[in-house]
Image (cartoon, rainbow, N blue to C red; front, side, top):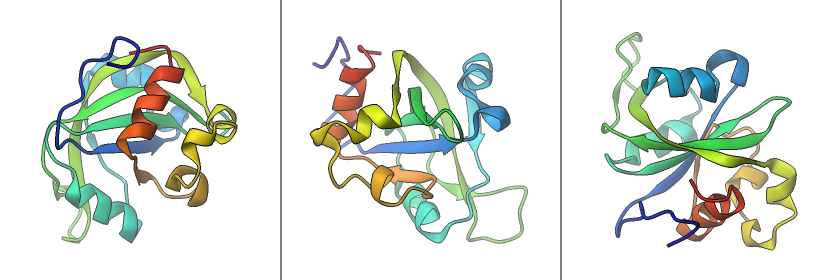
Length: 147
């Protein structure tokens, strides 16, 4: 158990999903409680989305000037074709709010912590869906003072 978090399950995968806060920030997501995660067009990010499973957990990350993890979302659907697009390669997943970080975890905090060496968040900065090793996910939760 990390910081009171008891939501880790064997076989679960962990992710970091990025959004521009002015487009769909945490507060709007928290108000909506659930959303379709769409707008992803990068081939590698789409590949990651296709492997997401119901029950996986995602760190909800604000890009732009903020660059910080705001909370945790849960994947509530398998990937499916974006219903607003004709290209079958473009997929979406449904996610719901799990919990908000007590302290947003900033990119400088992540970069300064040896636990995150090699994470695609810092290696491939433009990638909008980032696989996250379980230990790194738990460390972000710990830095955020539990969720």
